Length: 243
Ligand code: ADP
Ligand code: MG
Image (cartoon, rainbow, N blue to C red; front, side):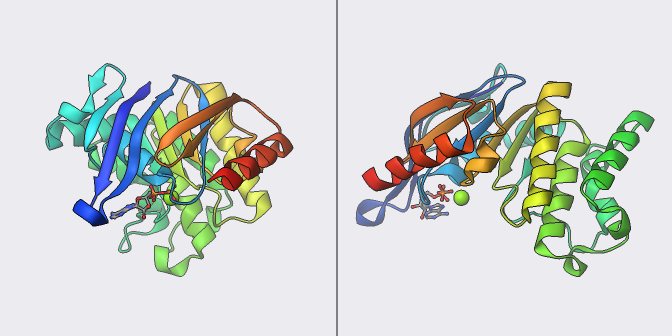
């Protein structure tokens, strides 16, 4: 569904160059829920940004389905993103002047369509599941960080995109709400065949995924099939001690 081949991403140049990605290769298989883990600074967010076409690689290739997005023009890329991808980023990216309901419907609005009845029912299900029913007429600044994060999650899932990228989607949530979010992501892949790539540092969150990919120093160093939170924890500890 998404593929990164030997990607590098360099920031700065000369002596101050930072290689956020350094030969990263990764597949996000269709219909699977993949967790991406790694120490802070290992390139997880950069990897998500380049896979979603929000940032460019310095070298290497990024594919979404059969399309190599590293070759696309901005306009084509924007359309592809709008039609096929949902994002939940660490900064939420909610529009401050729009209320919650309008923020959630924004992906439809931008694409010049209205949610169908089935889509509206799905949105209602998401809003209720994540406890946002009483917040639909509020604007982002009237919400807590956790509530803003939940709005960003509903928005990302609303159009049922083929592919969902989520960067620490449970980072600001209490554990019960975090589990609701993880259950929704798991439901999105299991029931609706959506492909999900989720960055997390939380072994419990990663234990919801079908597969866990480990990143260190800008490249993929290992991957595991679905594992318990305990097994993921001890693996992460080993990875951090070697770093
Ligand atoms: P992670 O999400 O795993 O914590 P990031 O992808 O955010 O890691 O960052 C990887 C490395 O790239 C870090 O060393 C970070 O400081 C650097 N980096 C990320 N974005 C930028 C940027 N815009 N300018 C310069 N350096 C950056
Ligand atoms: Mg990050």
